[in-house]
Length: 220
Image (cartoon, rainbow, N blue to C red; front, side):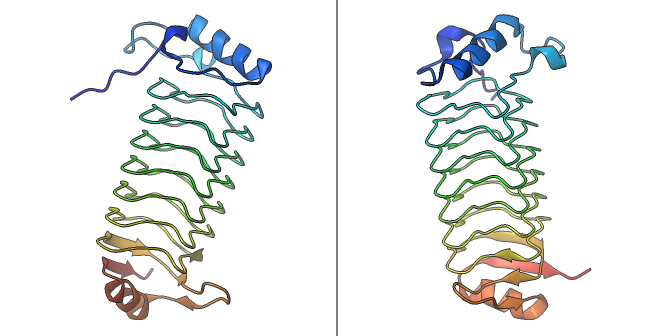
């Protein structure tokens, strides 16, 4: 079933408190074609670079390809939003709600998504290297071929995630919940909660299995 995303100002449930962020959204919807199959140009993408979107509810909106690098999206609701290929580098997504959002191929290197909710989100082929993802809820998310190299996932809920082809090189997974995680990943992974404890290969596979995951580790 094809998801229909909001493409007009009327679809915004709550505007951000900051005037500049609201103006950026208004300008975006003013130029966004109503036909979702229409060709998208750079001028028809949201430019929210370094803007403050706090207080907003952007549930279900079409934000495809949005430039949100260094933006403050802390606590913002982006449930079921279309963020396909969006830029989120160094963005603040702390405690944001991205349940069931389309985050495929997002560029999120260095973002802070601690305590964010990403339940059942589609995060395939996203780049989330060097990100703070502590205590984030990824349960049921699709993480195939996503990159988490050097990211901090301590305490994250990753139960039921599909991770085939994902890269977790030097990621920190201490205290993460990984029950029912499935797929083949690239390590090594730091499983230490306080002090570093980096493992790889059969030892890492055993750690996953002892924690209820069906994960294999590919060694290059």
